[in-house]
Length: 427
Image (cartoon, rainbow, N blue to C red; front, top):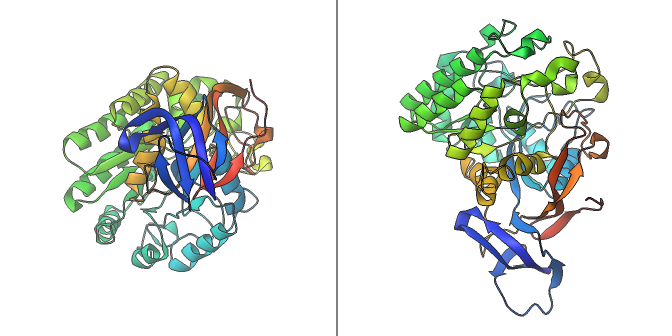
Protein backbone atom coordinates (compact mmCIF):
# COMPACT_ATOMS: atom_id res chain seq x y z
CA UNK A 1 0.00 0.00 0.00
CA UNK A 2 1.20 3.50 -0.89
CA UNK A 3 0.09 6.33 1.39
CA UNK A 4 0.74 10.06 1.32
CA UNK A 5 0.09 11.86 4.60
CA UNK A 6 -0.41 15.35 3.33
CA UNK A 7 0.02 18.79 4.86
CA UNK A 8 0.58 17.84 8.50
CA UNK A 9 3.11 19.23 10.95
CA UNK A 10 5.72 16.47 10.82
CA UNK A 11 7.52 16.16 14.15
CA UNK A 12 10.52 13.84 14.36
CA UNK A 13 12.83 14.36 17.36
CA UNK A 14 15.42 11.92 15.96
CA UNK A 15 16.21 14.35 13.13
CA UNK A 16 14.95 17.53 14.83
CA UNK A 17 12.34 17.90 12.07
CA UNK A 18 9.40 20.21 12.78
CA UNK A 19 7.88 21.19 9.45
CA UNK A 20 4.55 21.26 7.61
CA UNK A 21 5.18 18.83 4.78
CA UNK A 22 4.14 15.52 3.23
CA UNK A 23 5.12 12.02 4.28
CA UNK A 24 5.16 9.26 1.64
CA UNK A 25 4.89 5.62 2.71
CA UNK A 26 5.48 2.53 0.61
CA UNK A 27 6.02 -1.12 1.56
CA UNK A 28 5.66 -0.28 5.25
CA UNK A 29 8.46 2.29 5.25
CA UNK A 30 8.83 6.05 4.98
CA UNK A 31 9.83 6.53 1.36
CA UNK A 32 10.07 10.31 1.05
CA UNK A 33 9.49 13.50 3.04
CA UNK A 34 8.64 16.65 1.11
CA UNK A 35 6.88 17.57 -2.12
CA UNK A 36 6.54 15.19 -5.08
CA UNK A 37 3.92 13.67 -7.36
CA UNK A 38 1.35 11.82 -5.24
CA UNK A 39 -0.32 9.97 -8.11
CA UNK A 40 -1.06 6.40 -7.10
CA UNK A 41 -0.95 7.15 -3.37
CA UNK A 42 -3.86 6.97 -0.97
CA UNK A 43 -4.11 10.51 0.37
CA UNK A 44 -4.58 11.21 4.07
CA UNK A 45 -5.26 14.88 4.75
CA UNK A 46 -3.39 15.83 7.92
CA UNK A 47 -3.83 19.59 7.62
CA UNK A 48 -3.80 21.23 11.03
CA UNK A 49 -2.65 18.01 12.70
CA UNK A 50 0.58 16.57 14.05
CA UNK A 51 2.28 13.67 12.25
CA UNK A 52 4.71 11.97 14.61
CA UNK A 53 6.42 8.65 15.32
CA UNK A 54 4.26 6.09 17.08
CA UNK A 55 4.53 6.23 20.86
CA UNK A 56 6.68 3.62 22.63
CA UNK A 57 5.47 2.60 26.09
CA UNK A 58 8.11 0.53 27.84
CA UNK A 59 6.09 -0.17 30.98
CA UNK A 60 2.68 -1.80 30.68
CA UNK A 61 0.85 -4.77 32.19
CA UNK A 62 -1.15 -6.90 29.75
CA UNK A 63 -2.10 -9.55 32.35
CA UNK A 64 -1.80 -12.45 29.91
CA UNK A 65 -1.12 -15.26 30.64
CA UNK A 66 -3.11 -15.88 33.80
CA UNK A 67 -5.27 -12.82 34.44
CA UNK A 68 -7.26 -12.44 31.25
CA UNK A 69 -10.32 -11.21 33.17
CA UNK A 70 -8.31 -8.01 33.68
CA UNK A 71 -6.76 -7.62 30.20
CA UNK A 72 -5.50 -9.70 27.30
CA UNK A 73 -2.73 -9.07 24.83
CA UNK A 74 -5.41 -8.42 22.22
CA UNK A 75 -7.37 -5.86 24.27
CA UNK A 76 -4.17 -4.22 25.47
CA UNK A 77 -3.07 -3.79 21.86
CA UNK A 78 -6.45 -2.26 20.98
CA UNK A 79 -6.02 0.22 23.83
CA UNK A 80 -2.49 1.02 22.70
CA UNK A 81 -3.54 1.75 19.12
CA UNK A 82 -6.35 4.00 20.31
CA UNK A 83 -3.82 5.93 22.38
CA UNK A 84 -1.32 6.28 19.52
CA UNK A 85 1.04 3.73 21.07
CA UNK A 86 2.60 1.47 18.44
CA UNK A 87 5.09 -0.41 20.64
CA UNK A 88 4.44 -1.74 24.13
CA UNK A 89 6.59 -3.68 26.58
CA UNK A 90 4.59 -5.86 28.99
CA UNK A 91 6.00 -6.61 32.42
CA UNK A 92 6.53 -10.23 33.49
CA UNK A 93 4.26 -10.39 36.57
CA UNK A 94 1.77 -12.75 34.91
CA UNK A 95 0.77 -16.31 35.85
CA UNK A 96 2.97 -18.08 35.03
CA UNK A 97 5.66 -15.42 35.31
CA UNK A 98 7.52 -14.55 32.10
CA UNK A 99 10.75 -16.11 33.36
CA UNK A 100 11.66 -18.50 30.54
CA UNK A 101 11.69 -18.62 26.75
CA UNK A 102 8.50 -20.70 26.52
CA UNK A 103 6.38 -17.94 28.09
CA UNK A 104 8.11 -15.33 25.93
CA UNK A 105 7.21 -17.36 22.86
CA UNK A 106 3.61 -17.63 24.09
CA UNK A 107 3.41 -13.83 24.31
CA UNK A 108 4.92 -13.58 20.82
CA UNK A 109 2.31 -16.01 19.47
CA UNK A 110 -0.61 -14.16 21.03
CA UNK A 111 0.79 -10.88 19.70
CA UNK A 112 0.53 -12.20 16.14
CA UNK A 113 -3.22 -12.66 16.70
CA UNK A 114 -3.69 -9.04 17.80
CA UNK A 115 -4.03 -5.85 15.74
CA UNK A 116 -0.40 -5.32 14.71
CA UNK A 117 0.91 -3.26 17.62
CA UNK A 118 4.51 -4.23 18.40
CA UNK A 119 4.70 -6.17 21.67
CA UNK A 120 8.20 -6.71 23.07
CA UNK A 121 8.10 -8.56 26.40
CA UNK A 122 10.20 -7.82 29.45
CA UNK A 123 11.51 -10.94 31.16
CA UNK A 124 11.74 -11.56 34.88
CA UNK A 125 15.01 -11.10 36.73
CA UNK A 126 14.38 -14.09 39.00
CA UNK A 127 12.46 -17.33 38.66
CA UNK A 128 8.85 -16.80 39.68
CA UNK A 129 9.83 -13.26 40.70
CA UNK A 130 10.81 -14.75 44.05
CA UNK A 131 14.07 -12.80 44.25
CA UNK A 132 16.18 -15.90 44.80
CA UNK A 133 17.44 -17.55 41.60
CA UNK A 134 18.09 -15.85 38.28
CA UNK A 135 15.64 -16.55 35.48
CA UNK A 136 16.71 -17.91 32.07
CA UNK A 137 17.96 -14.52 30.89
CA UNK A 138 19.99 -15.68 27.89
CA UNK A 139 17.25 -17.92 26.53
CA UNK A 140 14.66 -15.17 26.99
CA UNK A 141 16.90 -12.74 25.12
CA UNK A 142 17.06 -15.15 22.19
CA UNK A 143 13.25 -15.41 22.31
CA UNK A 144 12.91 -11.64 22.06
CA UNK A 145 12.82 -9.83 25.41
CA UNK A 146 14.07 -6.23 25.54
CA UNK A 147 14.86 -5.90 29.26
CA UNK A 148 14.59 -7.72 32.58
CA UNK A 149 12.60 -6.68 35.64
CA UNK A 150 10.81 -8.11 38.65
CA UNK A 151 8.36 -5.21 38.43
CA UNK A 152 5.68 -5.44 41.08
CA UNK A 153 8.33 -6.79 43.40
CA UNK A 154 11.85 -5.73 44.32
CA UNK A 155 14.89 -7.99 44.23
CA UNK A 156 15.76 -7.40 47.87
CA UNK A 157 18.90 -9.54 47.94
CA UNK A 158 21.67 -7.21 46.76
CA UNK A 159 23.90 -10.11 45.81
CA UNK A 160 21.24 -11.50 43.49
CA UNK A 161 20.65 -8.05 42.01
CA UNK A 162 24.38 -7.57 41.40
CA UNK A 163 24.60 -10.95 39.68
CA UNK A 164 21.58 -10.03 37.54
CA UNK A 165 23.30 -6.83 36.45
CA UNK A 166 26.39 -8.76 35.39
CA UNK A 167 24.26 -11.18 33.36
CA UNK A 168 22.26 -8.31 31.87
CA UNK A 169 25.52 -6.78 30.68
CA UNK A 170 26.48 -10.02 28.99
CA UNK A 171 23.23 -9.98 27.02
CA UNK A 172 23.11 -6.20 26.43
CA UNK A 173 19.87 -5.77 28.37
CA UNK A 174 18.80 -2.93 30.66
CA UNK A 175 17.46 -3.79 34.11
CA UNK A 176 14.17 -2.10 35.03
CA UNK A 177 14.18 -1.47 38.76
CA UNK A 178 10.99 -1.55 40.80
CA UNK A 179 12.25 0.75 43.54
CA UNK A 180 10.48 -0.35 46.70
CA UNK A 181 12.20 -1.51 49.88
CA UNK A 182 9.85 -4.35 50.80
CA UNK A 183 10.98 -4.22 54.43
CA UNK A 184 9.23 -0.87 54.79
CA UNK A 185 5.86 -1.92 53.36
CA UNK A 186 2.97 -1.13 55.68
CA UNK A 187 4.93 1.46 57.62
CA UNK A 188 3.81 5.04 57.93
CA UNK A 189 4.63 7.57 55.27
CA UNK A 190 6.16 10.94 55.90
CA UNK A 191 3.98 13.47 57.68
CA UNK A 192 1.83 15.34 55.22
CA UNK A 193 1.44 12.45 52.79
CA UNK A 194 -2.32 12.13 52.74
CA UNK A 195 -2.16 8.65 51.27
CA UNK A 196 -1.60 7.35 54.81
CA UNK A 197 -4.36 9.48 56.27
CA UNK A 198 -6.87 8.11 53.80
CA UNK A 199 -6.00 4.47 54.28
CA UNK A 200 -3.78 3.85 51.28
CA UNK A 201 -0.82 2.48 53.17
CA UNK A 202 2.06 1.35 51.01
CA UNK A 203 5.25 2.69 49.58
CA UNK A 204 6.70 5.60 51.57
CA UNK A 205 9.15 7.90 49.85
CA UNK A 206 12.08 6.47 51.80
CA UNK A 207 11.32 2.98 50.47
CA UNK A 208 11.57 4.24 46.89
CA UNK A 209 14.71 6.26 47.46
CA UNK A 210 16.61 3.55 49.33
CA UNK A 211 16.34 1.13 46.40
CA UNK A 212 17.17 3.82 43.83
CA UNK A 213 20.37 4.53 45.79
CA UNK A 214 21.25 0.85 46.15
CA UNK A 215 20.70 0.04 42.50
CA UNK A 216 22.70 3.08 41.40
CA UNK A 217 25.64 1.87 43.50
CA UNK A 218 25.40 -1.64 42.04
CA UNK A 219 25.11 -0.26 38.52
CA UNK A 220 28.20 1.86 39.06
CA UNK A 221 30.34 -1.13 40.02
CA UNK A 222 28.93 -3.51 37.42
CA UNK A 223 28.84 -0.83 34.69
CA UNK A 224 25.33 -1.93 33.80
CA UNK A 225 22.32 0.04 32.56
CA UNK A 226 19.75 0.55 35.31
CA UNK A 227 16.36 2.02 34.47
CA UNK A 228 14.26 3.31 37.36
CA UNK A 229 10.54 2.68 36.95
CA UNK A 230 7.69 5.04 37.94
CA UNK A 231 9.69 7.75 39.76
CA UNK A 232 7.39 9.66 42.10
CA UNK A 233 9.43 11.65 44.66
CA UNK A 234 11.64 14.71 44.75
CA UNK A 235 14.29 12.67 46.56
CA UNK A 236 14.26 10.08 43.80
CA UNK A 237 14.76 12.81 41.22
CA UNK A 238 17.68 14.23 43.19
CA UNK A 239 19.34 10.82 43.46
CA UNK A 240 18.95 10.09 39.75
CA UNK A 241 20.32 13.53 38.88
CA UNK A 242 23.34 12.84 41.08
CA UNK A 243 23.83 9.44 39.46
CA UNK A 244 23.86 10.93 35.98
CA UNK A 245 26.35 13.60 37.03
CA UNK A 246 28.48 10.85 38.56
CA UNK A 247 28.56 8.93 35.28
CA UNK A 248 26.30 6.03 36.22
CA UNK A 249 24.44 4.48 33.27
CA UNK A 250 21.01 5.31 34.60
CA UNK A 251 17.73 6.24 32.94
CA UNK A 252 14.36 6.86 34.53
CA UNK A 253 10.68 7.11 33.75
CA UNK A 254 7.57 8.59 35.30
CA UNK A 255 3.86 8.36 34.49
CA UNK A 256 1.21 11.03 33.85
CA UNK A 257 -0.42 10.57 37.25
CA UNK A 258 2.82 11.57 38.97
CA UNK A 259 3.10 14.91 37.18
CA UNK A 260 -0.64 15.74 37.27
CA UNK A 261 -2.20 14.41 40.49
CA UNK A 262 -1.22 14.74 44.14
CA UNK A 263 -2.36 13.07 47.35
CA UNK A 264 -4.86 15.81 48.21
CA UNK A 265 -7.40 14.14 45.89
CA UNK A 266 -7.64 11.00 48.03
CA UNK A 267 -10.28 12.42 50.35
CA UNK A 268 -13.09 10.53 48.58
CA UNK A 269 -11.54 7.07 49.12
CA UNK A 270 -11.85 6.31 45.39
CA UNK A 271 -9.92 3.10 44.71
CA UNK A 272 -9.34 4.25 41.13
CA UNK A 273 -6.84 6.67 42.66
CA UNK A 274 -4.89 3.89 44.34
CA UNK A 275 -1.61 3.02 42.66
CA UNK A 276 1.91 1.96 43.57
CA UNK A 277 3.87 4.16 44.15
CA UNK A 278 1.02 6.18 45.66
CA UNK A 279 0.27 9.76 44.76
CA UNK A 280 2.70 12.10 46.45
CA UNK A 281 2.64 15.74 47.54
CA UNK A 282 2.29 18.86 45.39
CA UNK A 283 6.01 19.46 45.92
CA UNK A 284 6.82 16.04 44.46
CA UNK A 285 4.58 16.75 41.46
CA UNK A 286 6.52 19.96 40.77
CA UNK A 287 9.82 18.10 41.09
CA UNK A 288 8.70 15.46 38.58
CA UNK A 289 7.67 18.14 36.06
CA UNK A 290 11.01 19.92 36.39
CA UNK A 291 12.86 16.59 36.04
CA UNK A 292 11.06 16.00 32.75
CA UNK A 293 11.99 19.49 31.62
CA UNK A 294 15.68 19.23 32.51
CA UNK A 295 16.14 15.64 31.33
CA UNK A 296 16.74 13.92 34.65
CA UNK A 297 13.67 11.83 33.88
CA UNK A 298 14.13 10.41 30.40
CA UNK A 299 10.75 9.14 29.36
CA UNK A 300 7.04 8.93 30.07
CA UNK A 301 5.45 5.49 30.45
CA UNK A 302 1.97 4.57 31.63
CA UNK A 303 2.42 1.62 34.01
CA UNK A 304 -0.91 0.59 32.44
CA UNK A 305 -2.35 -1.70 35.12
CA UNK A 306 -5.90 -2.87 34.32
CA UNK A 307 -8.09 -4.54 36.93
CA UNK A 308 -11.57 -6.02 36.79
CA UNK A 309 -14.38 -3.67 37.78
CA UNK A 310 -15.34 -5.82 40.79
CA UNK A 311 -11.77 -5.75 42.11
CA UNK A 312 -11.58 -1.96 42.02
CA UNK A 313 -15.05 -1.38 43.48
CA UNK A 314 -13.91 -2.83 46.81
CA UNK A 315 -13.11 -0.53 49.74
CA UNK A 316 -9.89 1.32 49.03
CA UNK A 317 -7.93 -0.66 51.64
CA UNK A 318 -8.76 -3.96 49.91
CA UNK A 319 -8.68 -2.86 46.27
CA UNK A 320 -5.59 -3.70 44.20
CA UNK A 321 -3.04 -1.05 43.23
CA UNK A 322 -2.95 0.26 39.68
CA UNK A 323 -4.65 2.37 37.02
CA UNK A 324 -4.97 2.17 33.24
CA UNK A 325 -3.23 4.66 30.98
CA UNK A 326 -2.65 3.58 27.38
CA UNK A 327 -5.66 5.41 25.94
CA UNK A 328 -5.10 8.69 27.77
CA UNK A 329 -1.33 9.12 28.12
CA UNK A 330 -0.72 11.37 25.11
CA UNK A 331 -3.68 13.69 25.71
CA UNK A 332 -2.83 14.05 29.40
CA UNK A 333 0.85 14.66 28.69
CA UNK A 334 0.15 17.17 25.93
CA UNK A 335 -2.41 19.03 28.03
CA UNK A 336 -0.30 19.24 31.19
CA UNK A 337 3.20 19.50 29.75
CA UNK A 338 3.01 21.20 26.34
CA UNK A 339 0.03 23.49 26.76
CA UNK A 340 1.52 24.66 30.07
CA UNK A 341 4.89 25.41 28.45
CA UNK A 342 6.93 22.84 30.36
CA UNK A 343 7.91 20.85 27.25
CA UNK A 344 8.02 21.71 23.57
CA UNK A 345 6.18 19.44 21.10
CA UNK A 346 9.46 17.79 20.05
CA UNK A 347 10.50 17.29 23.68
CA UNK A 348 7.22 15.59 24.51
CA UNK A 349 7.42 13.22 21.53
CA UNK A 350 11.03 12.46 22.36
CA UNK A 351 10.02 11.39 25.88
CA UNK A 352 7.11 9.31 24.65
CA UNK A 353 8.70 7.74 21.57
CA UNK A 354 12.35 8.34 20.67
CA UNK A 355 13.90 8.09 24.16
CA UNK A 356 12.05 4.95 25.29
CA UNK A 357 12.97 3.28 22.00
CA UNK A 358 16.62 4.14 22.64
CA UNK A 359 16.44 2.80 26.20
CA UNK A 360 15.47 -0.68 24.98
CA UNK A 361 17.65 -0.39 21.85
CA UNK A 362 15.00 -0.79 19.15
CA UNK A 363 14.81 1.01 15.81
CA UNK A 364 11.59 2.89 16.59
CA UNK A 365 10.66 6.45 17.47
CA UNK A 366 12.04 7.77 14.18
CA UNK A 367 10.07 8.49 10.98
CA UNK A 368 13.01 9.46 8.81
CA UNK A 369 13.31 8.14 5.24
CA UNK A 370 13.92 4.38 5.25
CA UNK A 371 12.44 3.82 8.70
CA UNK A 372 9.47 1.62 9.51
CA UNK A 373 6.26 3.66 9.19
CA UNK A 374 4.96 3.45 12.75
CA UNK A 375 3.14 6.78 12.69
CA UNK A 376 0.47 8.64 14.61
CA UNK A 377 -1.71 11.50 13.39
CA UNK A 378 -3.12 13.60 16.22
CA UNK A 379 -5.30 16.70 16.39
CA UNK A 380 -3.97 18.65 19.35
CA UNK A 381 -6.59 21.36 18.88
CA UNK A 382 -9.46 18.98 19.57
CA UNK A 383 -10.54 18.55 23.17
CA UNK A 384 -12.62 15.82 24.75
CA UNK A 385 -13.72 14.59 28.15
CA UNK A 386 -12.19 11.34 29.35
CA UNK A 387 -14.90 8.74 29.88
CA UNK A 388 -13.84 5.26 30.97
CA UNK A 389 -16.96 3.78 29.40
CA UNK A 390 -15.37 4.55 26.02
CA UNK A 391 -12.18 2.61 26.79
CA UNK A 392 -11.43 -0.44 24.66
CA UNK A 393 -9.19 -1.81 27.40
CA UNK A 394 -10.91 -4.25 29.73
CA UNK A 395 -9.72 -2.02 32.56
CA UNK A 396 -11.79 1.08 33.33
CA UNK A 397 -9.82 2.01 36.45
CA UNK A 398 -8.71 5.59 35.83
CA UNK A 399 -8.45 8.57 38.19
CA UNK A 400 -8.89 10.91 35.20
CA UNK A 401 -12.55 10.19 34.51
CA UNK A 402 -14.39 13.39 33.61
CA UNK A 403 -11.22 15.39 32.94
CA UNK A 404 -11.14 17.60 29.85
CA UNK A 405 -8.01 17.17 27.73
CA UNK A 406 -6.61 18.17 24.36
CA UNK A 407 -5.12 15.80 21.79
CA UNK A 408 -7.30 13.37 19.86
CA UNK A 409 -5.56 10.46 18.15
CA UNK A 410 -6.98 10.46 14.61
CA UNK A 411 -5.04 7.60 13.03
CA UNK A 412 -2.45 5.06 14.15
CA UNK A 413 -0.28 3.25 11.60
CA UNK A 414 2.01 0.29 12.20
CA UNK A 415 4.32 -0.85 9.40
CA UNK A 416 2.50 1.55 7.09
CA UNK A 417 -0.91 -0.02 7.80
CA UNK A 418 -3.75 1.92 9.43
CA UNK A 419 -4.76 -0.05 12.54
CA UNK A 420 -6.87 2.62 14.26
CA UNK A 421 -9.07 5.48 13.06
CA UNK A 422 -10.95 7.85 15.34
CA UNK A 423 -14.72 7.82 14.94
CA UNK A 424 -15.70 9.99 17.93
CA UNK A 425 -16.87 13.55 17.43
CA UNK A 426 -14.92 15.93 19.66
CA UNK A 427 -14.92 19.68 20.20
